Length: 170
Image (tube, rainbow, N blue to C red; front, side, top):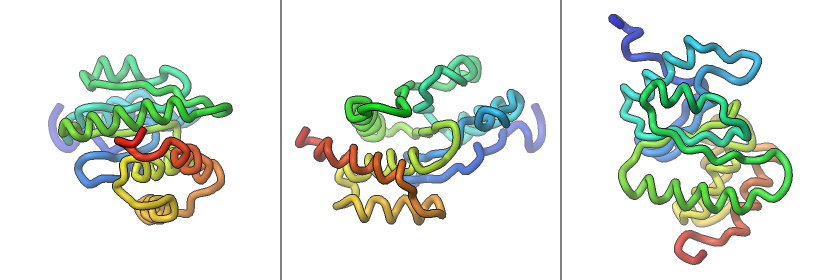
C-alpha cells in the first residue's frame, strides 16, 4: 500500500479517555447494518500504525475477532450481555484494563457504537480505578470527552461499577 491509505483511517467516533493510553470508538468497520469489511481493514491498519497493543471488544458476539487476528492485532473479548447482572464482567474487565495500562499498553475499547453504555463503562472504570474521585466527576469528564450527555443505560453502568468498590479495595 502507498500514499495516505497506507496509514489507514481512524475508527468512527474515536476518542481518547486517558490520553495516549485508553481510547474508545465504535466497532472497527462500523456497526451492524453499516459494517464494511474494507473500512474495518483500514481501521485495523490505523490502529496498528498508531501503536495500539490491544483491542478490547465488549460485543456479546465474537464479531471482528478473526479480523483482528488477520490484522495481527491482539484482542481481548469481554462479552457484555445486554440484560442481567454485569458486575462480574465489569470487575474482570476493569482489573484487566488496569493491568494492561500499568504495563504500558495502548488500548482501544469498543462496542457496536459509541453510545451510552460504553460511556458508562469507561466512566465506571475511571471511578473504580480511582482516577476520578466520584461518579458525578467520572460522568462529567466522559460526557465532555465524548461530546454529549450520558443517558440512562450509561448511568446504570456507572451505578454497577460503583457497587464494585475501588481498585485495591476489592
